Image (cartoon, rainbow, N blue to C red; front, top):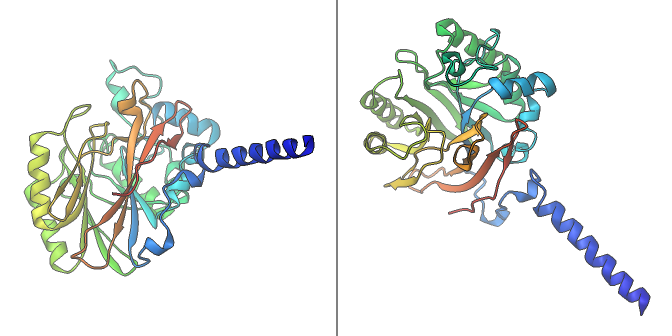
Length: 320
C-alpha cells in the first residue's frame, strides 16, 4: 500500500512538472495559442505585426553587455511562428555613439535615437525581416543616418518601407503565392493620408493585398478623431489591414468593412517601464487568405517589456 501511495504521489509530481514546463514557463513555445493543423489553411500567409522597436539608452547598454539577441531571447518562439515579422524601427541604425544614453527627459538628447549596427543582423536572425521606417525618429541623425540605416538593413537582408515624404518606398513581397504590398503612413513628416490612399488604390488595382503600417496619433493617449478619419480613408481605398504605432500604449481594434484596424500595438521593445500601459504591448498574427473576399483571421498576443531589456510573451489573447 505504501509503495502504491508513493508511486501515485510521484506520478502526480511528474505531471505537475510537465504542465508547468509546457504552460507556465515564460517564453516556452507551448504558451502560444495552438491552432490544430486541421483548422489551418496552409495557403494562408501568416504575418506577425509588432509595435515600436527601440534600441538606445537602457536597451543599448543591454546590447553592449550581452548582445542584441538577448533582447529577443524570451519572445523568439512567438517570432518564429510566423512566415516573417513586421515592426516599426523607431530610429536610425548608425555607427554614431549614443547621445541619449544616461540622459533624463529634461534633456532634448534624451529623445534623439541611434541604434548600434548589430541590431540589423539580430532583427534578421529573429525573423523580423521587414521594418517600417515611417516614424518621427527615423531622421534623428539626418539624411545620412537614414542612408546608413538602409545600408545596414540591406546588408543584413532586412526589407524596409516608408520614411519621409518623397522617400517612402512600398515593399512588395509574395508569400504563399499571395502578392503583398506594405505601405507606410507617417503622420510626422510623411505623405498626406490622401496621398497614401492613392498609393493603396494603385497597389490594389494590380491585384495586390495591401497592408498599411501607420505612425500616427498622440503619445500616451487614446484614439484621436483624425486617426479614425485616416483609417476610414485607407480602408475605403482598399487596405486589408491597418496597423498603428506611436502612442506607446495599446489602443482599440476596429473592423471597417473587411479591413481590420489596430490603432496602436503599443511598445514592443522599449525602455519604458513605469506602468503596465507602456510596458505591455500587443502582437497580432494575421492569417491572410488567398481569396480576397475572405476576411483575414487573427491571433492576438500580449507582450511585456522586462527591465532586463528583454521582451517576453504575456497572457495570450486567443483567435477571434
